[in-house]
Length: 539
Image 1: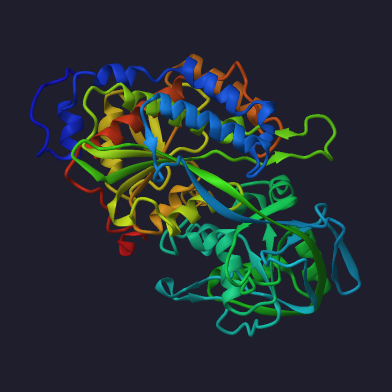
Image 2: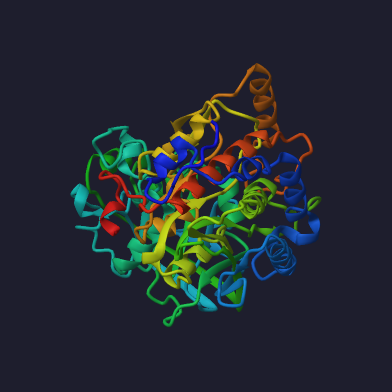
């Protein structure tokens, strides 16, 4: 695409991409995003020195100092007044692993059979002889004429809940959104709804396929220090105990109660459903409470004509930290998840710094904390925005960039949610790529990263990356080999940087995000949700 010198002010973002109406330094900026520089950022961000980037840990200050130095050098301004940081008040709740779940005369073991905890800021939380009530998918969705709690009489009792939602279970495209998970299928919604219904406890039955991750993720991610945002009532409106049980344990509990779990699941996916189990559960969660402050990082390149309007790029800087009880490698380096995203953020910031003419709107980079603990940093920001929400034009989120080489397509999670897809399609055409639906929509990935908190506030958000079809046969062979190497490394110590990673695909994607962002930042139009999007009613 040859660059043309034509007036840009009145053109739409799509037209900007189609005509190449950009300043003469644009191609240099676009090409400045390189695999070599990206790799250097990733290697440092995921190094052992940062100890797994646990919020408030040693690695946080090292990383934030690194980001401050890099963004200053690129000419970006502090995004929060005269500071690059936005303090986020966190509460760290660490449950004592010395606990058992008792159901009748049976006892179940922490991590091996179940993981229990609490969101309440309290050293003691418990359910004692709490009647178990199976509430199907634990969903109240008037728009789908669905209410699993309608006849449950759950107050003071413990809800036992299936993971995901009925659309996934049935594969019926007319039920919820079919196999694509809705927010109703997410674990955090289920705990929140059980709390709203007055339950004492909430237990989700883990199954790998509908959850989209194995039990190892539950035992690693839901044990150890758990973070929440500080609230005036110390989260006392949440259920006392919330947790997970393995499917085999749930089957045992249901069998003890005289029920067949599989038969009840069939009833649960057919319509609103609940069933008292006639057995009671007890578990005591003793916790250590620690209040601390972590930080979001925010840097801005002020717009040349409309500096009050912002395009915001997001990526989370945190990971899981380290586990000193482990033998061997104790550090969860989080190289793929999400040193790649933060490294990509720095590469794009460099690209913007090379433009001879600043974009008309401000371009802001927001690196958020505590994503791994439930999108807490982005939730805090969306509830306490530095840039007013009505001046936030769009969000582009980066989480776990492509490490498997170039592709013929780009995978869009939540494809069709907004007309940002149109801008992405035009940008992808420059690379001879097309848009494809994100892999495994049943996993609900659109609700599992930081853009979700912007979407809930009505801000169109794009979440894309990688693709399904390798560029050529050699890349396809590499993808198969690397996929095997990386298998099982999600939230594990083996998620560390590898020299064998092919970051050319990540570079492709970053160039697309730069293209789309630059178009939005130079447009007079605002991106819009599609009519079918569940977020269209938020704006």
